[in-house]
Length: 79
Image (cartoon, rainbow, N blue to C red; front, side, top):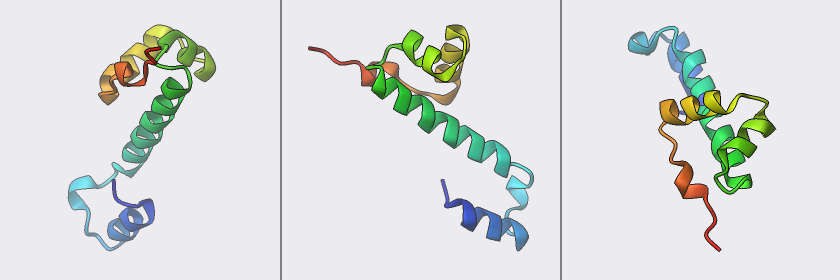
């Protein structure tokens, strides 16, 4: 994703016609994905623990993981 300031500058200059009004969604999606990935790393891929840390329902967590294309298996620790 482009740096947020670059996106804002392009939007103000009218260079982002195809993305008009999508800045909020882009930023929220990127932040949400990063947050979930970090929490999954912290919980070694345990989705229930991650959901509890984030204060969301486990089904919501699973839906977000699927929507954002996150592979929770990447964060599992095999000892």
